[in-house]
Image 1 (cartoon, chains in turn green, orange):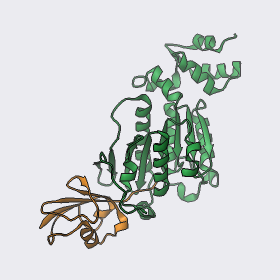
Image 2 (image 1 turned 180 degrees about the horizontal axis):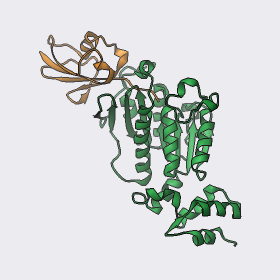
Image 3 (image 1 turned 30 degrees about the vertical axis):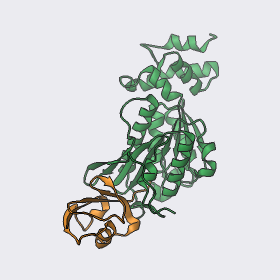
Image 4 (image 1 turned 45 degrees about the vertical axis):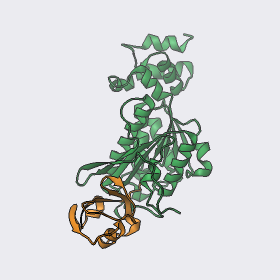
Length: 282
Length: 74
């Protein structure tokens, strides 16, 4: 057989391509899983691994997800879950950015950390994890800290930037670079039982507004640390926002922030419609 | 004057969720924050009657002041 597309069509059942046929095509034509998945989706073939997406995500939408490039800045508590969920959702390219290696105190919550990979770079663990759960997804692992100096290079060609940082100053830099590059940013932050999520589009200054009273240092996470469930909750809300931005559907958390309290089970919506000046930052 | 103070997240620990406070005329947010034993550095959001406020802002009779701590972990 000469043509991989003919092969894929032959093996498609009820519009869906089973993983076994996907693998067979990759072997027979010596193509990557990413190439096979791209070929399938471009030609209206739905990879069967996404079949439970199907009632909410059409083949054309699954293709949009696959041809998107999402940067996840920070691969710790939030970032680990975000990468896991993006890869399972079928986002085709993930840029994972983090300078750190796993340490023992990460094990209570960071889904990419295991006793076996202590000392291993977080971005390398992210790449290996995604290779296991969805080999069609390409992870670009960047073992570096995001800042204004390297931001433009790291976010080149990116559809959405997802903030999974643990530093307010780097977040403000990410918000600035995203805005300058015209990239939407999904912001999330956590501390103890508490967290918040907001989406900022170019021209908006939501993240700056959220941290307008910040001078230096960290927030309540410094004293409280973070449990296993808070990053999972906030990361999942962030991925829902990324999915909606890519697909252009639903109501985004623009010009507002959801503040989540998992101890009292309260959710508060804080408006950020009017640009707010930094009050105390130098 | 009487104002309503609402506290969120860790600010509630050992304090309250909501309280009516009787304050001298012209009291600003900073005074309320410091009287609660909070420091300026801990403040994430100040809302006065549902609009963003600042520490220097003077309160008026019947105002509802909401205080949220700074959250920045990931």
